[in-house]
Structure formats: C-alpha cells, structure tokens
Length: 109
Image 1 (tube, rainbow, N blue to C red):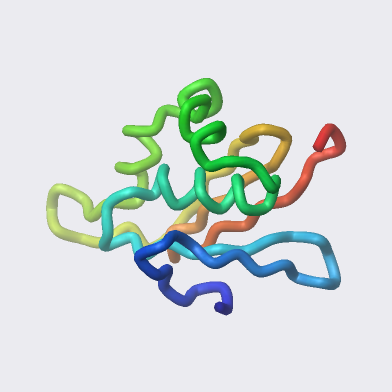
Image 2: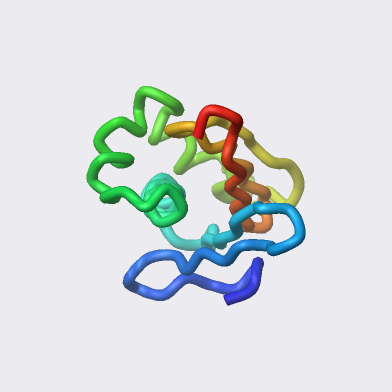
C-alpha cells in the first residue's frame, strides 16, 4: 500500500518510509472509524494488541472528536485542508485531511 490508498476490511496496511523511519497508513475519510484506523495502525507499528491501544485511546485524544474532525461540514463542503497531531503510546500521530496517517516513534518509544 502506498500513502493515500484505501484500507481493506481487515484494517490499515502500514508501510515504513525507509529514509526517515516514519510509518504511513491511510483512512478513507468518507468511511466511519478514523479512531479505529489510527488505533490499529499504531498497534501494528508498536507490535502490540490493538485492544491495548483502543482501550487507552481516550487517554490521548477524544475519540468522538477525532472521528468528526475531517467530516463533511454541515453546509455540505468537504474539509480539504488541515491536519491534527497527537501522541499515542509513545508515537506521534499526524492525520491529514487527505486521510494520510503518519506515525513516528518518539524518543520514549
């Protein structure tokens, strides 16, 4: 999978950019579940059970807010610009309005 491609029904595929140690996944923003996609991708990068990440996710970011952040606006226009960044379990996560997810290990991970 390359950044920007869609995920399958089993969860996101994560790839590592060899030159900088950043892992990439993507989420189709027309689908629900951005929180789930991020949790599964972080779990894959960290090599831990997704259940561990999902159960603690609310300690890092508001799951409902994350699921709504890039949704279509009430006037029907798409959110086409911007990003959000946060840290989950020692990984810096950046989600772009394109659906690209970049996961970078922090110094503690």
